[in-house]
Length: 397
View (cartoon, rainbow, N blue to C red):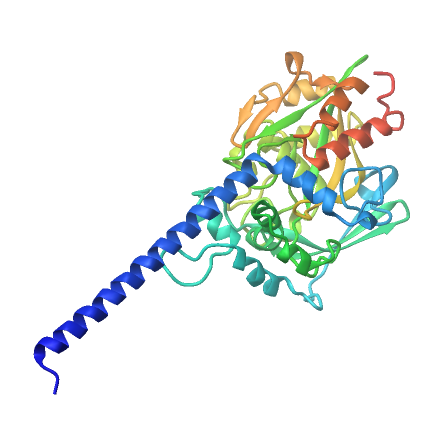
């Protein structure tokens, strides 16, 4: 029979082992979080290099056009077209063979466990909890599930989606690349299969102010501490997600229009108007309120034109991005954007001399389009706009 002292010793040993186990678990968990934060720092600071590496690894069959993005046949249009040549179709029925949820779970294997214990975090939750990006929210987005060329234009099919689903299945590819591993990317296999992951359409707009004899374009030096997509790179402005303007159920259908997204991005990134950030609870008045009424009127009478140049996937995150150019007559631009901010929540505007834009000439276009730190979608917008400058009525500049 064991003595009381023996039982006491056994209990003490067991408690010691439990304590050691807890200490080891805590240490490993701490290392996992520290490793995550170091990887995220690489994503923020070296996104241009990660994108270049992803481009170099990409299958040559995915590089079908003379742009630094992954494209399928017919995605880069032979000539610029109006927004009406991009047909948007809404799908109510669930898509078949949707593997996005399963792949979100697969991607989470890259990430640390919840610091409070339990299962691994998704990328979105890691950004909020570990990076303290508390401003991120899981808003509604229009999830593209099919992209089809159509007689010199495009047809895009959409379903309702959420921003965090996009982060967890697509933007997480940037994080994986920063770890030096590619298992998740290899498992997805086909970047053009939009049923394998939740995508979110980026709408990129190269803004050109057109004067009587000159034209100027605007760029955006993005702040890596505030943005997840395209952090610490030079980008066109405005650029944002194709998404509803607010949290009401009605806006999901009401805002299903590329032009409305472009206008909101102008209000957000050029004028820093809080209501345009998509977290409100009431509809935006696109017909009577500034600057939407002024932009609409200018578009209606031809003093503002929006042309679509094509669509491509960012090679790092496989994000689909619609490439557009918006040409605004000088008097309209100066009136609408007379209070244009120089620095906003997402970065610094590059506005050129006297706020009239960088010169839209070959030397300056090449400088920004070919710079290593320019996002590839922005490079594509610049190169395509320069290629089509005569059709865009910019050749006199």
